[in-house]
Length: 240
Image 1 (cartoon, rainbow, N blue to C red):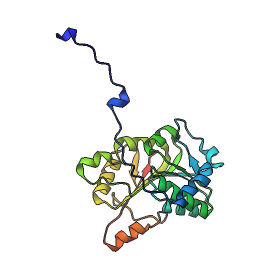
Image 2: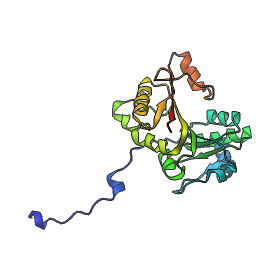
Image 3: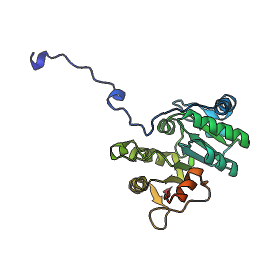
Image 4: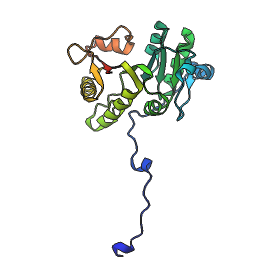
């Protein structure tokens, strides 16, 4: 068959040719009765469903207040504690694991807080499609999966494209606060944030900062301290 006789191959759709590498793998554990009951009771008031439409954050919370968004809140202990300690602020949490969402909602209900909303969805899609530009006061990323093997570094959520999205979503003067107990990932975060346009490091030593008082000390972190593990906090501010 000559070159001219070869049948044309249909172009592959863009989404099939360029699949986005995700920073997580869903490994759902068993959901407890407390968690599933909390989702049934509390989701109608605190849960947010993903859709390709920008949120009206004033309508979501019934007021205008500084917005803190946290990605990967785990079981939600520290997120609920922050929302309870800062009633003048509103919080949005994003987590892909159902049991963590259920635990967070159960704790939020018991704490009686009303300034928290949660997504159970991919954070990259929520940020891109639902969070208005310039609407966030603070972005938090605490102890994300470090993907410590070199061949998996491409799965780390802290990448130039993600930081460019955050730069759009943060208000001028808004902050990015990240923390990790993997030194290699801390170094990766520092490099990426330093190279991202539109941000300034708040560290007086141009690298890391002491844990700020607003970030609760988790049991996991306390155990790490006892074992001699380090924790690295980074706080960058969006420039004018």
